[in-house]
Image 1 (tube, one colour):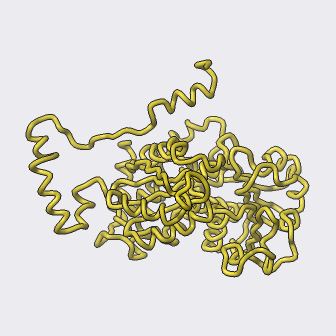
Image 2: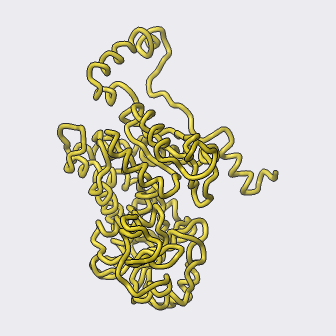
Image 3: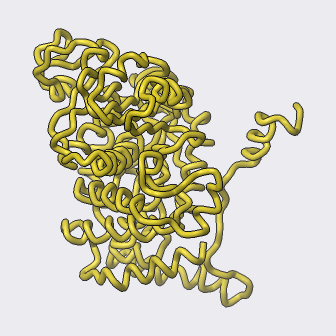
Length: 435
């Protein structure tokens, strides 16, 4: 291997793993040993046995998240199994720590396929049982890279069973950031959210939840498309009561091309190069094109630029080498930071909307000099090329975490008896200077 080529650099970066155990307390003397383990540890054990809620006080539980996966939908690579998912789960743990000072640990699950097979569809019962079994150690569960449709049932049932936040990032992380971006697109366009006509291509975990979040944020008209075309009312093959039947709309459009005529927003969470540039020309004036397939978008930004010319439009992708990257790291670390800090029992829809609104507002303010210095070739001023903030903008640590915590308390899912927003903001501002 050439030590200078990119593949070698990437593999060397991952060699030995990306996470390790850090100790927040010293153990340098006999007295320390007596405090950390026997006999002192027995006191903490008895305290928690008598009052289970004190596990949040006397263990790492309250500040630790499990990143759980069975490896059935890794990135855009597909079903490669639990071992192959470890680098991604380690990566999520790194992002939790670096961006929000949240401790987390990869929990990859084997033997979770239907009928006990080594390959094939996920058995929701096995994932639910395994995750519930390890949950007592954690203050939150971040589900990751679990294929649809099993991921929907797994998240819903675990959220009902457990008394800690359960969040499937592939479903909700992208959806929250897309809502933030669409809110800011509406501001730029001078439109109310209710005036937008949205087309989503991709009816998997991300697409379904994007639709749900957009409608929670005020959008009223959404057409969903899958590999068969538009999901319309009465479409053959969509079983009554199924998720796809639930998002079907009354429309004469039958193809993605037809659905895009007059649309103000296109959101792709599907496959590369599935949109022709001529179709973009049929959209409404001042449209938004969010081509989020990774690493190759549904349509290349340069093709959209070619067809739009000098006309106003907004372009977003999932890539870091173009403006307006829709990246989940803008969401999950801060969402969990706020939820953990008020010891939330769950993550409500209002908490997700609050996170999106905080992200949208962050893009409309001026970033600090440190953030700007990391992006010397970009102009970080609210506009068509800057509708969502950058993950290295430390202001969003305070803004999103605070919004989530306040909403958790207002929704009655926080364990804390009272909540002082000003004091919590000051604590966050101080914390963000220490990591």
